[in-house]
Image (cartoon, rainbow, N blue to C red; front, side, top):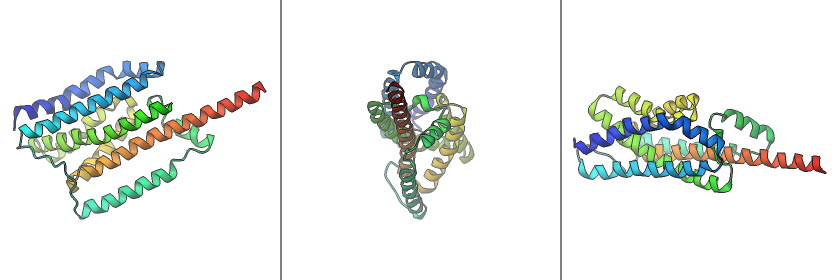
Length: 238
């Protein structure tokens, strides 16, 4: 295995999560206190995601011993999962309408640990969708396609499964302890999906759908609450 592969693995498996671990408190404080910083954070993360992804892609040209399959392949398991993913996305679309204050407040309560991070304006909403697509594509290539394969090559299946998703979860430390647990669970689901289908695009699509849905719920809940507050103020003033 080429030295470059070990260096990329060190960057993704140690330096990247360490950077987020030591900076997340400062980042979160700034996000909570400066409304303009959300866009900056979205753009920075998109940049980091794609830099790491292109390092992985570029490294495949130098190290042929670590075989990474970027192409969509389908077996029986993959086809069944693809159908289930489409059903899941359809259900998400059907159930994600924020039409009442009760639902908006319920969503905000459930997402209280990450609500400060979610988009509050149309421009933020657009950039958050770009971030969600980048996260879905890049994190699956970085962690499932590369890191899992690297660890599988150098350790064993159990260690590869556990360590890949612990590292993945640690990169989400800024969104609270509950989200770390959720990230481990989702990471294990996506890794299992990739392992049994050898199709990285199935977890990519599911990852993108979940992230986009969170931005959708956060943005439209905020809009409904803001509209309600405006109407209340207008009623009082009149």
